Image (cartoon, rainbow, N blue to C red):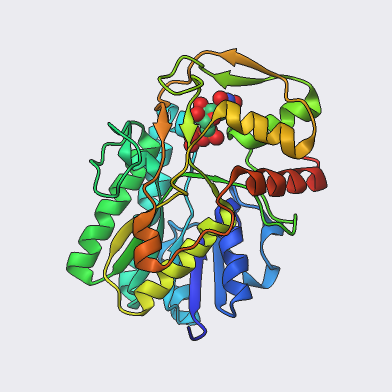
Amino acid sequence: MERLKILVTGGAGYIGSHTVRLLLSQGHDVTVVDNLSKGHRHNVPPERLYELDVRETAALAELMRRKQTDAVVHFAAFIAVGESMREPERYFANNVGGSLSLLTAMVETGVKRIVFSSTAAVYGNPYTSPILEDFPIHAVNPYGESKVMTETMLHWFDAIHQVRSVALRYFNASGADPAGDLGEEHEPETHLIPLVFRAISSGQPVTVFGNDYPTPDGTCIRDYIHVNDLAQAHILAVEHLMRGGESDRFNVGTGTGHSVLEVIRAVEEVTGRKVPYTIGERREGDPPSLVAASDKLKNQLGWNPQYPGLGAIVEHAWRFSEKHQFA
Ligand code: UDP
């Protein structure tokens, strides 16, 4: 594919920064927009970074005009489910308001292609797994709802303004770039794998949220997807749109689920360390099992995950956290 001019919102965050690195490595011209409220300056080359909030519509439009943007990859959003249950207003303002501002700037400047970070949370508590893209949409928290609402806006911006979009519905993004200098740095951390690492280094047990689910070992099952495979999906989605492809949505998961206890065992194997853990109460809103049907992305966009197992995910994440002493 020719050299594309891509604007990436939230490019200093976890998944955004891995995608920016991959886009740059493929020779694309990348502009990162990030307000650094969650993202990290050190995640992106300084000359690529524009410190801007996506809600600043006029400034975004000016930047897109100046950069002659071909396509947008839109990550910028808040991601914590629990927080969204306490402060829904912030999630709708930032995630929905931010997306509306971005779409408005795109229409103003004639940018007609966008890849959007969506989530498996749009399915809520699905009646069965694996989850297909045409399962009912039914968010069960404001975070998921903010992504549903943005997908809905994308539908209407396509119908009315011919803005073509791909929504990528992520399952459990995890792992780190194998080089060890990019990875997951959330504050506060709520994700399982980094919390398991912290348990190893602090000796304070991680809590397994419930072991009485209707799953083989009683703990919840999730589909853990390596962040670089996720990044690859964004590039394929941009290429699909640049070829004149229609708007669409895809799950991004491996199609294989792992329980919380399996994750703990994988961490013990990779690190050679014992993980202290206790069994606690269920976490509110956790469905027993979320596993993607991932054939659509593979068949239609040619996605071919490089790291489909837990081993590489845990190994790369561990390398990153050891190097940066987050563990
Ligand atoms: N989990 C857990 N203890 C923790 C954090 C997470 O048992 O301290 C479980 C959680 O209930 C879920 C899985 O690990 O089944 C993955 O949770 P995470 O928050 O990483 O991602 P989510 O599935 O919520 O997107």
